[in-house]
Amino acid sequence: MTSASLPSRSSHSWQLILADLALILFLLALSALPAAEAETGKKPVEARARSEDAQRPAAFEVAAAQALFRPVAGGPSLAEWLASQPRDSRATLTVFVRHPRNGEAAAWSTARSLAREAEASGVAVRTVVSAGEEGEVYASLGYDALVPGAGGSRQRGAGQGGAR
Image (tube, rainbow, N blue to C red):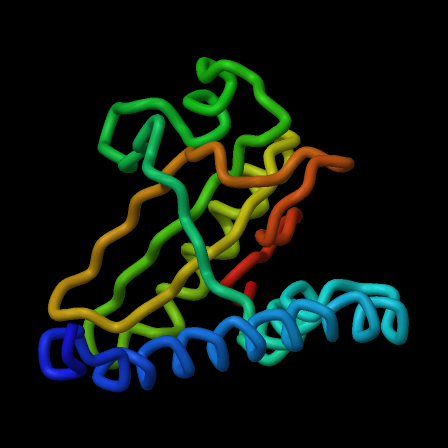
């Protein structure tokens, strides 16, 4: 056989060298993980994720309404309505009050009175007061409060996400 009839191995050698270098780089990175974990006591990915979570502001989360209250003439009061709802330690009542221009003081007064009425019923309450085209008042009962001892990123308690 002549050298012209043999397949050339030089055309594929660069691929083998590149694959070897990639494998070496992967093994070096993999061997560095235990050393980084031993120094910090945490896995590097966990530490980075925790630092990103610490820099992120707390998110305002409201669960989907399980029940909705709107004050109507002749209808039940908020306390009566809450008494008719099933009790659950995860339940949070969110009072939403929208006010038109120059109606902020009345909106805060309405929000405070509804929040006090709900708190007297033993439910965690948060209030959200915002400006809008028209005035609107309603309360949403949702299961978005965390039970103590359960994990999660949301905070538990009255007054989440809004001032009273």
